[in-house]
Each structure stands twice: as C-alpha cells, then as structure tokens.
Length: 157
Image (cartoon, rainbow, N blue to C red; front, side, top):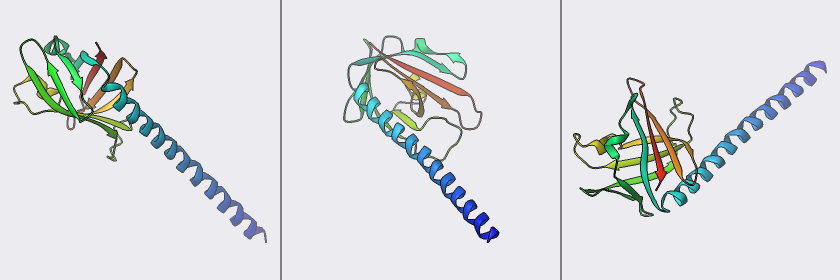
C-alpha cells in the first residue's frame, strides 16, 4: 500500500511539473505572437532611419546616414537618399529555429539584393528582436562561426 501511495504521489508530481513547463512555453509563444503583430503594425507606420549599426564592435552607423527606410505592408522595404533608392524585402515572424544561442523568440529579416561590395549587404540577415517601442526597433545578430555580435537600431523619423 505504501509503494502505491509513493508511485501515485510521484505520478501527480510529474504531471504537475510537465503541465507547468508547457504553460511557460505557451506563454512565451503568445508573447512572441503579440510581439510579431505589434512590430508588423508599427513598422509600416512612418519612415525610419538607422540610428545605430555596430558590426562586430565597429560603429558603421555613418554608412547609412541620409537614408530613409519605408516598410510596406507587402513586405517591401525601400531605402532612399538623395543619391539612390534601393528596395529589398522584410519580414517579422516567430523564430522557427531550434537555435538556443538567442534569447529572442522573434526574427526580423531584411534582404537587399545588392552586390557584396555595397554597404546594404551588411543589413541582409535574420536579426533577433532585442526590444521595440513605437519609435524604436533594436536588433542583434550573432555571427555563425566567429560568434561576433552585430547590432542594428532603427528609429522613427
């Protein structure tokens, strides 16, 4: 009888532990879904600029001075200055990778189909969302092999 009680208590404890863990995961997924929705809504409202871009510890923000970024609902992003206009693609979605190197559950993807020699090829990446407000989107990317960190911050103009 005592063995049955021990097994019963152990079983109940295991069930409670498993259900508590799955609720945490569901909460994280819900937070990520809300974050994706918030960013999608916010980013298409108005024009943006790069207020900070640090590539492996080197501040390269000045490479994007004078560019205005416009994110459209159809996933097209344009970057315009007095000298040129570039178009690319953008998306924001829940992180589907099983990569544990990131604390972020949300990816912000940018792609500019430009030659490797152009500064905008540096922006083409799957960025982890660090934080966001109605006037700021902070992103980071950890380089594959070297582990160096790039950061990118957009600010509403």
